[in-house]
Image 1 (cartoon, rainbow, N blue to C red):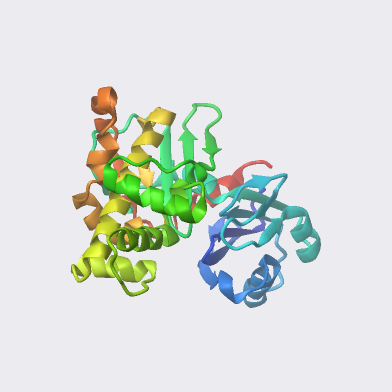
Image 2 (tube, helix red, strand yellow; image 1 turned 120 degrees about the vertical axis):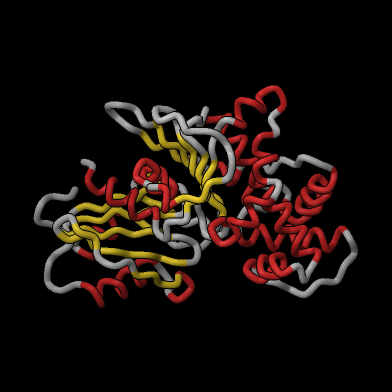
Length: 320
């Protein structure tokens, strides 16, 4: 898609923010973030970005990482309802070639290129260089993908693991899941392990304990937990970290991810010190007869501010 004299649009489209950058002759410009809630559709937010950055040089193509399932180069975002359709965008913006991929596919392609300053380590041994690696991340939703570092043809495998059934590991978690089941029917991983999921945990714990607590946004729950000013917020974040450990450990076993487990998304980097002190790693390793096997697998929080754009640049260099 990229040649020596071209301009390519890169986009990382989540439920909260749409981030864009232009790559001109192999050099990426600044990344700009626009709020999803400020635009009725994807065409509107893209037009707003392009109106400020086009300078006469045409765009030869685009690679867009989106927070939703992708089929036939088209996606409806899980948490916003936007439709991103490659064919429609090619016609509307006169792009030659648009590629739509799952956002965690882009994150998975970033993994081989992350350096120690991009990562915050939380336990485990040394990664196996030729083994699969997993990236998962709670943000507006929860995504998960696996990178297979094959010598001739590396592969990123995307999933919809955020919609798998949420496991409980003790009676308290079972009670929370039962409460969420009354609200939602099926209780997916994403009902607990994302921003809105943290609110679900907070509200469920208060309801189970017959407490009246003030409404709080996810950021307010984490702030109250870190300050120690609200026991319910503290327990919600503790449960969030523990459940994340269970799910991350399950992913490590599912994909034989001896290349490591990486935690991305918008929440974990902000609470990485808290996460390191939490039950995350103990629950990651609590796999019965395979505890020693999982204990050797390293885990990190990705602290690079825009890792998806590392992967997007790699994808842009690939032939469509």
